[in-house]
Image 1: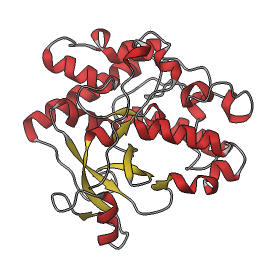
Image 2: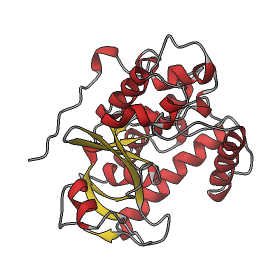
Image 3: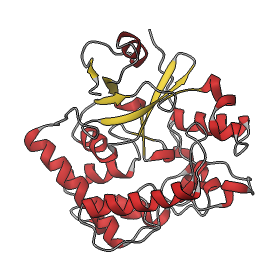
Image 4: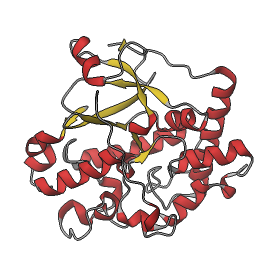
Length: 284
């Protein structure tokens, strides 16, 4: 179903969903409320530490004309979480999913991975890479963290550069098809919200690096795409006993606030005291 386009009409995604009778909506969302690279939860605003955005900004300024010169390469080389616990920022957990590869980490509000779903993740990464020119595959390549093969890193760099150059020439072009918009999960905490980007990781970063402060985001109205912290006890990952309520809420708060896991600050990419706290954004 095509989204109801409410860009320029409503600022609140809550109000947009209500006005649309809970059909998919398209709303302009401030980039500082958007979180990217999955559970790394980087702010998608220009000036954040998001490696896609810093790489594009360096490219546009002439400081990084190749993958080898980019902050994206540094990110993939230095940030190598060894477990889901490190990736999610739940250190000290030592059983179940928390000891497994970060490749299989799944937010508690989304569900629990079955064996077939794990295989699907690898197949998806391969098909995504093939779609954008990859000829060799490493099953552990993941754009959210390293280590990553040199060829996949170069592919992601070239993909970002091609997109930002296209936007400079043609502007941002969307359509009503399934992948025609950046799509995100609406995270709700009291009367505040953040949007965790799903589809469109490269698009939203290209918009940010190009100087935009907002992005059109498609939000679906179902329970898997609108996540309210006060319903944490009913999240699938909690109901199945994978997460405690405290663990689930701790992860939600970190993502909501745009903070990275401790392992990121300890890997040498950024000084620990450079963490930027989340600025509370309340509805009027």
